Amino acid sequence: DAGVIQSPRHEVTEMGQEVTLRCKPISGHDYLFWYRQTMMRGLELLIYFNNNVPIDDSGMPEDRFSAKMPNASFSTLKIQPSEPRDSAVYFCASSAEPQPQHFGDGTRLSIL
Amino acid sequence: GEDVEQSLFLSVREGDSSVINCTYTDSSSTYLYWYKQEPGAGLQLLTYIFSNMDMKQDQRLTVLLNKKDKHLSLRIADTQTGDSAIYFCAERGYQKVTFGTGTKLQVIP
Image (cartoon, rainbow over all chains, first blue to last red; front, side, top):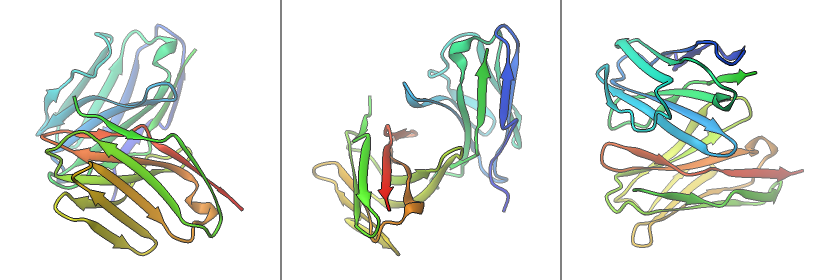
């Protein structure tokens, strides 16, 4: 079975640019999560969706961050404009309750 | 809010047993999980335990749960260099999974 697929795996861009991270959850999973991982703050939940609807976005750091899930097989996390402090590894995970979350391999984002 | 705590670092010799500990605060936890993260990769589910269980064994892995003390442990028998990674404890409460900060396991050959 295909796992959670994230793209790109690595992204390097200059501050001020728009960044779009993509995620394809496991087929049949109705929950999708976006996390950010940094050395300083560890693993942070940014937002999660249930049946394509955002349920809790309290972890989204600023209005510069937005996430969408237009259908059950695709989600995006967008940062506009990007800043150097947004540099982190961003993970997408999906689950079919009450099963555990399955994680993608992450997008390593560097903002110069 | 819910909190999950782990020690940051553990070093063991190859062949010894490793014990990684975790404490949590949510008394309504239903499932507790252990994930492994290798460098450059995502979190991989290792094992999980339902909150009404005390112990679960899966090959070299043993999970112990003390629900009264809200304490979870992961024992890895015969630790190998390939077990070097960061191990995350997580608990599932009401509609939410909370992750710990992760314990970096270093296995010395």
